[in-house]
Amino acid sequence: MLAMQYSVRLPSEFNLDKVYERVSLRGPMFDGCPGLAHKFYLYEKEEHLYAPLYIWENTQSAQDFLMNSLFGDVVQDFGRPRVRSWQILDFAYGPSSLEPVVMTAEVDKVCSKDSLSLLKQSEAEHHKKMLAQEGLFAHMTLLDPDRWEISRCSLWSKKPKSYKPKADCVYEYEVVKEKIPLSGAA
Image 1 (cartoon, one colour):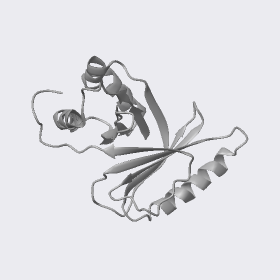
Image 2: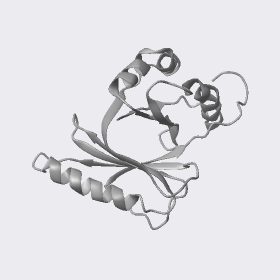
Image 3: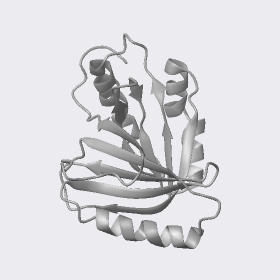
């Protein structure tokens, strides 16, 4: 499995209603997309970013997406964004069956002196503990071997107030749901 994400800084006139509209119009286009296991539509309010996260079954499916019209539409509308990808060390669903409303992404640097096998073991233990968190829809541990970073992404149906991130660098995104289109194309 492979995780992939791009971020688009939206123009100021592109308000949150237009984000919802775009998601509603484009979401159905991904139904039956070969190799796509999950797509989470994410929005980061502070930086006004649209940052969808894709979970692909294999690298060929991810590559095919980058070469097809679904991604081409993003390029046409916003310019070609930088696309990040990660190897998925762990992915599993948590105890909540309710759709997620927020995603936290914690990022830590992997030091060159760190044992990768011990790191993987430690992250697997943390992943297992996360899966018991009330309100957790899904959790994944991602490795970027280019930047040597570990990312822990948690999708929450309801984020517990007692939850404390493990990393210093934490991003929080709203999970945008498909709604009935408002008006026109976005």
